[in-house]
Each structure stands twice: as C-alpha cells, then as structure tokens.
Length: 411
Image (cartoon, rainbow, N blue to C red; front, side, top):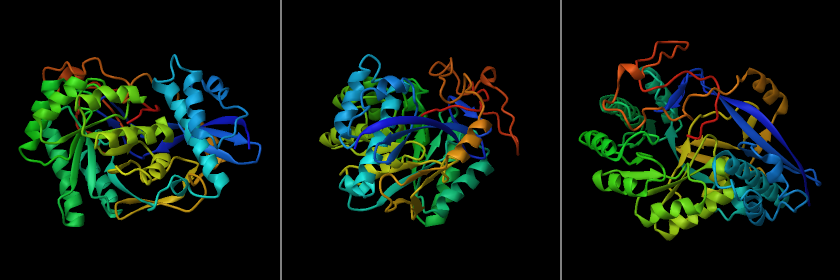
C-alpha cells in the first residue's frame, strides 16, 4: 500500500449559540473546521480534522510511503519541517496527516482504531465543556441540561473575568448536574491563560470558599512552569494544562517543576503526539486528558493508555458533513465497530457549508486581548464590546471580546 495524494476540505461546526472564552466570543456560533484527507493506491482514504498550513511541504515526507508505518512517518514529517514543525498550525497540519494515517492503518487492518491500538473497552469517560462564556444564565442552564440528559456528571466552564460571575455560573451548572444525577458533580474552570500568578490564586481561592473545584485550566501562560507551580501550591484544585504545547520538549520543564497535575493534549496535534504525551505523563504518575471538538482520534487512543482520566465533550453534534461512529451514553463516549476512526465525509454537504462560512476574522477566542493579565479590575467599562446576536440579550461580560463570524480556535 502506498500514499498517493491528499485533499483539504473546510466545513463548519454550527453551535446554534454564541461560543467563546475569556479572550473572545464568536457570536453566531459558526466555527470553521478544516479537514485533511489522505488517499492511497488501494482505495482506502483516511481523515484528520486539522489545518493544512505548509501541507505540500509536509506531504512530501510521506508521499509514496506505506501509511501503515505511521509512527515513523510522524517523525519524518517533523524532520521535514524541523524549523517550524513544533509550532502552531504547522504542528496541527502534521497532526491532521498523522490522524489520517492512523485511520488508514486501522481500515487496512479491518478494525476500529481503538482495537488496533490495544484498547479493551470502547467506552471513554467524558466531561461537558460548553465553550460557554457568552451565554446568559438561562442559556447556560439549558446547555448543561442537554449534557445532563446524556449522563455527563462533570463540567468545565469558561471564566476568569469576574469572580462573582464565575461563582454564580458554576453554582448553576453544579445544581443542574447534581439534580439530574443525585450526586456532587465535578466542576472545572478554564481561564485560558488570562491571569497573572497572584490573580489566579486570589480568584480561585475566592471560588473555593464556596465550591469544590476539580481543576483550574491554564490559569497563567502555558510555558510558565514556575507560575503554574506557584498557583498549584496556592489553591486546593488541581492545575491542568498542555493543550497548547506542541512537543514533548515543551512538557518536560512543566513536569520537572511539578507545575501541572492534569496533563492535557489537544486533538488537533494528532494521535502519535497524544500517545507520546500519555507515556511521558504516566512516567510522572500523572493522568492525561484529551482536549478538542470531536476529539475522535484521541478517544480511540485513550482506550489504550493506562492514565486516561476524562475526555472533553464540546458539541453533542459533529461538524456539518461529518458523521462519526460513536455516541454519548451515561457520561461516556461509546466508540463503534467501524474500521478506522469511523469517520464518514459527505463532501457535498461540506461544500455547501464552506459557502456559508465567512472569512476568518482577526479577533475572537484565538486572539489574546491587549489587556490580558494586565487588568487592575476584573471588569472595566473600557473593555466592553457590544455583541448582538439572535435571541435574548447577553449580559455585559466585558474584557475585549469583539464579534467574530468564523475562526479555528483551539480551545
């Protein structure tokens, strides 16, 4: 079997409501989702959700190769782009190719990837993650009621601007999940790198006077090993980070400093990256948790690692034109028996979706606000940007969150 070519597609995730974090909100809830499809001479094609930056250069490393040698091909792609390969969208493109190759390998074997990788159970524990900072209280409750109906017993909220607002919103979600399941749910808060070290400790300690938080995610900058360790010593909750790290060399200083308690890896970086991060975390007796919208490749991989904790469940629906052989039941992703990743692509639906997607804006959740980490007060009038959208008006959440119609943020 040989790799013969690749194609790139762009579809959209249609949330039907605003989505975003402390850095920005996409008011219409339409987020672009890029896809890489790799073809072979035996008619088997694999799919990876992720960008295609420098795709031609990266593909040169695997063109004509046997896709079943996926681990070695991953390193060939890194060597092909070694000046920029461990950074941003280029690393994401390598991850998309890598996921597509794992899809091909499992299809060629006639097995679902979770079985090929050595998984025993097809059920993967999940937690709810609504990307929800732009929601009113009633919208927030409605969103997490839907998660509760699928058995989700833990939730991660976006926050970090106002401690009283975070307290109110976390309490609302705690009550929704608690009433649905008759137990104390897990609660997490994601600040998306928006605090200084002391701001993080003050904010979280105030919340912990009332709430029991399982973890706080990205309280300070992703590379700040000393700062993450300081935050961890100052709060009761675990510190989670890693979704924006692109290579084991970026994890090592954090693990050496005891800076993180929950090791995360983003779905967009690929299956091989996740397997290697999981092994590194396991060597430090730490749990690992996949991050991302429809993290299907990492869900398959999670069944085969001994230290998987829980995987992020964002939208309950896949992107337009994409169907996945899995369902959510009793708080679990339940993987199917389809060979490979179980992804089916409808290119006609995707073409129509691409026409609906606007051009990427230059602001939103993927752009760090100018005042991030430098606000004297949690919320200031000068940071406020109106965000009109259909339905009830949103509260004034402040903090430099201009509108955006389309982007590809890695939450």
